[in-house]
Image (tube, rainbow, N blue to C red; front, side, top):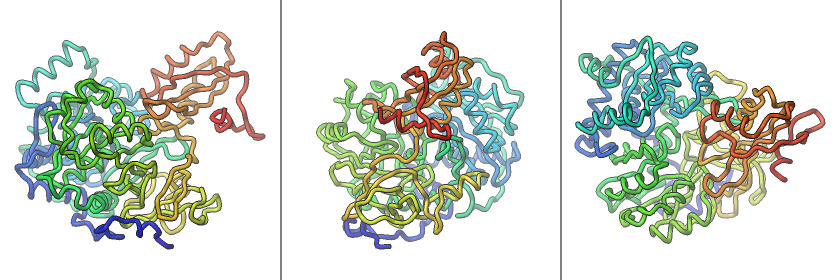
Length: 553
């Protein structure tokens, strides 16, 4: 296969990367601990953990997991946290103990959480106390033996740590009551671990690092098995692609507003930042854009990652004008398409273009990316080093340049498969290690890729995948609903929103009934914003609902 894109590579970028200097994610951060002990690693709400701090804290947590909980190599530990300092401590601790990390969205409903914990077989979970009541509802029906709870302020400097927890618990009433039979407070876990010594655990390329859950093509949430090889190669590929972008700065300072449990932020900010000895400025609540703007105004940051909605909303925030963008080297947009109008305004206001990239959970995630210093054109860019990409027809055979078909990816960052789901794995993998992305696009004569449409019915809301099957399954649980179909419709703020078409069997059923039921059973970004009742839904001759016809309307 001719790699047409190589002729468009910037000078100094190789077509293939060398083997990474790390054999595991653990090796990556252990190297950073040794190389940059006094550098800031993570900052949140005015408190900074240096690499030395993170080294010591994560070792305590690793000892707790291994010695106190008795977790052994390859067992799963779930992390259900927003962007707070406890996340990197828990993640690094889990890998030091040889465990697999299962990232969990803290906003999951009980139904969603139960499925992920049962499917992964997680033995322990670290959860923010604000969401512990949801876990309480389902934990008895899972394999979770031990719960570690933490407050937002637990790792902040005193007295802010105490004040933050007091305000959230007793003033804002943001921590609903919960109770577990077998649980430990995060700070107590660190104290217990400090008295232990970690046993040696071998980790290498083949070991699974993350079970990163995604809906795939069917809407059934399943865990993409991302190995240590997948993750360290993708970090190495990312650093190689960025080449000399940080040559004129003392160290990388990244604004990390996207949640670390999301694969984009996990790889692009958390792991790549640590590999470079950089500092991640964690934004716990990026929806508070005024607070977000004021927080980052105090940093000479040079890396900013986000989705289209973050760029757009931040620019419409009064305090945006107070942010100093003079040190910004690169702004990366992913998770959803960056709108041209947003990219144009960002360039005018910050002086830097938005670098658009493309990837999936199944590709760890970066597979295709624009050249660092190019202006925004709408293309998703070129396959990054050691990555192959082709356009295939329905028969799985490659199509000529310029023709539209399904984008397929091959490279060391492609997942090992779906956890305990060989059938679903086989459905997305072509012979030779090619991953079918489900996205429809084309490649031009210069090797640039363009997204044309999505083959899947997946809906993309603020960078998060929403799968119609899941929405429809919830809606039809209502007694008054006969049939339902969910589609995505364009939205200026979030890219798309969910609209549900429903056929009633009880004419007294209202739009509010459906919206209220979805509010109880679906995370915020999955909830439909619009309901339309129909007498019937368009179907194939075998009775399959035609969502495409509804979208075409």
